[in-house]
Image 1 (cartoon, helix red, strand yellow):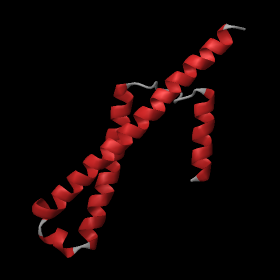
Image 2 (cartoon, rainbow, N blue to C red; image 1 turned 90 degrees about the vertical axis):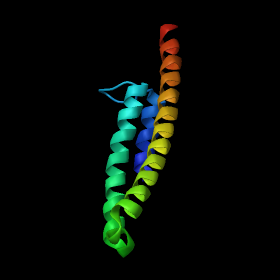
Image 3 (tube, rainbow, N blue to C red; image 1 turned 135 degrees about the vertical axis):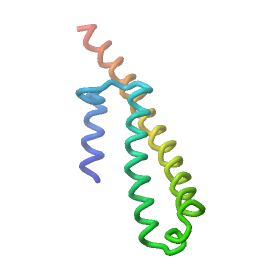
Image 4 (cartoon, rainbow, N blue to C red; image 1 turned 180 degrees about the vertical axis):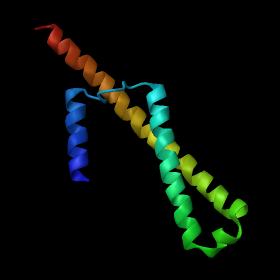
Length: 102
């Protein structure tokens, strides 16, 4: 976990977002959607296998629980990716201005 934070910090410091994409609402949405689908599916499978009440009533108990959890995950991930993307754009502008002066 610490190495992940270290790599993320070093990318941010250099103004890097990704080598193939740029920070945009489309990128934030796609990233959040993929993360939500993966985490929501794992959450649903885990709850289904762990609790009998979810096995007995899939549409009444399991589906709403997974949808609420997935919606919350989407909002949190979108907010985090949006914030990091905006910080990266600002950092790029600062670095760009720094090297234009030279």
